[in-house]
Image (cartoon, rainbow over all chains, first blue to last red; front, top):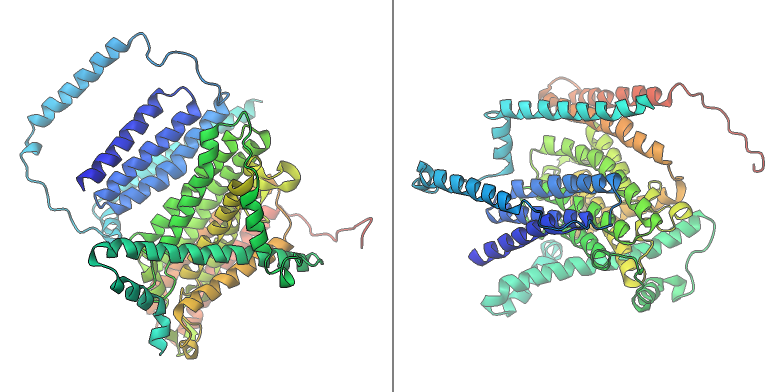
Length: 166
Length: 398
């Protein structure tokens, strides 16, 4: 169990680092896919099957493809960017990163969450998730649906204006 | 006798496992199942290529392969040897690693999709509560393989084919998923074995309760088949690999066994999606008539699968290819609204199940059919744009 977690976590981290630091954008996108797949494996390992499969379906099936399309449509994909991986302001960014990490660790250590016992992992079926979404959490679900619809319509409108001005 | 024959593969597996030491049994059990699935679908791939070439030959008024073995029966073997012995050529400009990985990324998810299909009574390799979601999740990753193949080849035809392929697969995935959603709504589960068992039993003692025999099921089945044809890039939706325009589309730059792997992936995708159609609409492994129940359940599953495959071959031989603009309009303006209407019809079917008056079933059927048929006619008329059908005049042919 522990070993599996270590392997998956290492895979996810390595591919996430590769996605940040490689110079070829398409390679970055492919490594990002691997990182997202690793996250899905983590969910499945925590026996959250539904979330894991949804993660694969949404992030690998749709978001990754969207990223790849965006890369291909916006610039000459494949020609590596020659600028250095580490920029001049790296000291500042490391400081900012450490500060954020420090404040997060501080607040977690001093919160009551760390002393609370781990909750019993519930016996979840897809049916139960669906019931919860449609009864207790129906309002947040509707709000998100409305937001996404608005975003979709907005995207279409932005795309349409371009065509009219021609 | 019937029980033994029906469960013969389960009994065989248990028998083999009984001979092995306790420690390696779980591993051996996995290996046995996987090798059975791979060999059956590998053989089915060989048979289907032969049948397809023969059938297309008959449709196009020629003989088809008839040189290797009696009636050309050994043609798949010859093809396999040819593919294995061919030189593997990689373009100099290609991104070698991605070029190498693309066929692998295509084959693995497709093979995973086989793991949730119920092939017979008690014969499902992995029983998942969210089986349908798993099926579509792994199916969605094949788009990435198409992109990897097209991009890494550094070839304009390959890239164009990949772009077409991905656009088409994304567009048709939505009607594909939505048409199965009607079944999920009525059966109330995402697990494939439970959907099969929901279709068991016979109405009036002889009408099977398959979903395809309900109005929303019939419409869903047809919509699913159309979307599945497009999803597996087959004619009439084979624009991503249109030979006359793009050489071979996204796998133009592949040769030897890698080319064969793309071919295999395409056919396996078709088998998997046909298997899903059988599970969702054609009653899975259930027999069509009560008196035919003595036939083993797995024979029914594969019989229905072969029926669907021949349907796909027939369609390929008879329908001309669509244009790109027609392709997108068809998915977004026609299939998508109809699948949504189909969901409404399924809901109406669900809520009208308590109707209780003379010939209630008939009225229920007609009412739900009308919910789908009226939008279908209206939508078709609106999209036709008032075009008049005229007799086509051919100048040089009769």
